[in-house]
Each structure stands twice: as C-alpha cells, then as structure tokens.
Length: 270
Image 1 (cartoon, one colour):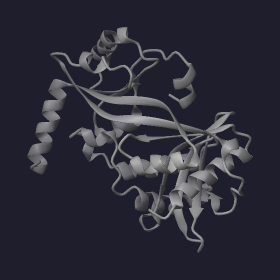
Image 2 (cartoon, helix red, strand yellow):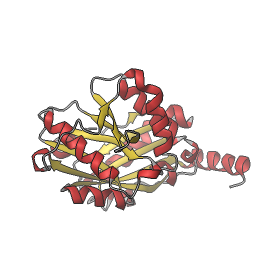
Image 3 (cartoon, one colour):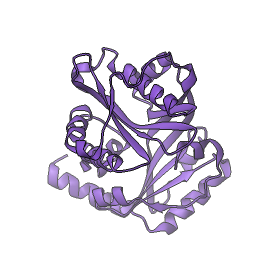
Image 4 (spheres, helix red, strand yellow):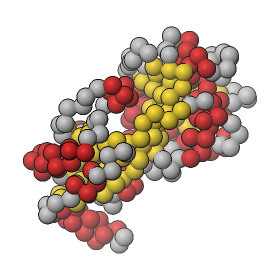
C-alpha cells in the first residue's frame, strides 16, 4: 500500500499473500492494512485473519486505533506489536537552493555489484519488525535489502542513487519510488559507518529532495521505525513534518508459533 493511499483512500480489508516474506521465512505469510482507522474493525480483522489460513499475518494500522491490539488474540491466535512506523513529508520547494547532481549519482543495472556492497556495509546491523519475532529473526534482512535494491535497479518505478563524499568515495545509498506524479518516496536510505555523525545522511536526503524537485515533484516522503531517532532529527532539521503513524502487529497461529519457536530453541539453544 503506497503512502498516498494512506492519506486519501479507503483501504479494502483483505489479507493478501506476501510472497517475499513467505519465501524467506518458510511460513505462509499474509499482510493486511487496516485503513482508515475504525474502532469497529477489530473483530472484523480478527475474523479475516482466522479464516485466511495464513500462518502469520502482518497487520499495519493507524496508531490512533488503540483498541485494535486487544482484539487480535484468540484461542487459536497469538499477537503482539512489532513496531511503530512513522511517515514524514517535505515540500520540495522548501529545500534550500542547490544542485542535486553535485554529489549524487544514479545507478544503472550495470552497477548491481556496487549497490549490493553498499547495502551490506550500511545495513549490517539494521533491525526492523522482524526482530520482534523469534521465528522471523532468522530472515537475513541484509539479503532482503540487497534483493530490494537489485529489483529497483531494473524497475522504471524506482531509482537508486549513490551519494558521494567530498573525496569522491561512496558515502551512502538511497532507493526511491518515483512512480507517483506528485511525490517521490524514499524506500531505503543510509550511509556507510565512517560517514555517520558528519552530516552525510542529512545532505544525501536533501539532495534526493532536490532531485525530486528537478523532476517536477511537489514533495518527498520518507518513513522509519519510531526508535530511529537520529534519522528523524536529520529530517526535522531539513524541514520534514510527521504525517502518519502506523502500528505493526504480528498475528500467528498459536500452534505454528509454538512449534517453530520450540524448534528454534532446540536448534540454537536460545
């Protein structure tokens, strides 16, 4: 579900297969977006999940829907909040004048190896909602992000940029969704460890915003988990404002959870 859908659309309540997460976990994984938030939807969501046949359903819902969490457990299902996702947006016209092409290079499919190396360096210790689930912790997040960047390189709907440091070395990587006519959305962004704390990340995001403005886009959108305070501070310094808060829940069949969690303990001793 795209950012603009969260702002304006009535999302159909439906559990949809997540092929990537099913393949990575060995479970049958589905996703459902509960939008816009409605206090009366909890039992309806629970019924859809129970009837879906999925081992795990990842639920995204507006954070203001505080009653939802209490409705997602049943004798056959176990649920927990996995994270909170925050969206921010900025008008590209509010960015300081500058040249986006200075220090920003768009990659092509021929640059796949370079993109994969940067992803491995940048996201080696990254944690997302998978970290809340003892079964999904075995998913290789870096490998998933490498696949994401590789797919983006071959897509007309995405763009992959490398930010350059003053000495010309690669300092960061950014994957954006450029499919909407009015905004670009940053899907994946980060800088290499040695460039952190030096303003390189903030400068890369600013240049991505200038790139969007040069393409005629009105705004730039970006999101992250609520715990990533350092990047949100960088966004606020640039002028980004928060727009949407979404809670992520994992809802699993109790039998599947107990079997897989027990198997993991037996294999790893954890």
